[in-house]
Image (tube, rainbow, N blue to C red; front, side):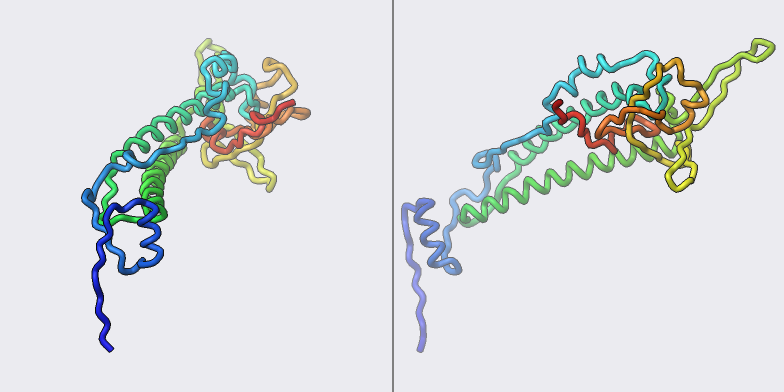
Length: 260
């Protein structure tokens, strides 16, 4: 028995009518488009949500300046006061970078042409639009991670010295002939396994604390040790590290969400 096919033309297609026809004639339905290309921004809208911290007082310049201390390096690498202002300044910079990147992604996605020769279902369009958006997002994230890895490798590979004395302690003293001598000492950390780690060869981190002593009571020999003082208060979610950048990258920012 020979089957014959015929073409039926339906005019005045609406979204509802198209869905109805698609459910019945999925494999044989053909609906050519009069316009095969248009920018995604003509029919796609975005709901963008920033991290709550990026919309908080914690990234404001007033907060960063309030944490700034002229003698910050005298507290010791383990003390949160040493790097607090710098960590929040970096956090603010990261938020600014994120906002700029979101703006660029939104612009790039919106100007990207959606091309199809045939009418698609809502599900198909949503899938294609989401795939395009995810592709731009993943590309942007990869660029940020690549830049951060390059920055961290450059700092550690060249042992760039932190101005806050968190990875190298520089002491200026006068000898008997009144010549000034500069002595540089690497910050050392005793791990739980008993191995000594240094900021020159390793990348130690520990929970950030607030030590109970006045900063002028902490000796230079004690500052060189990457260990918190007894009876110190832990700053939840923040860390101490060889540089403020490494400390921030380990942080979870827990204490910023605590309401007491």
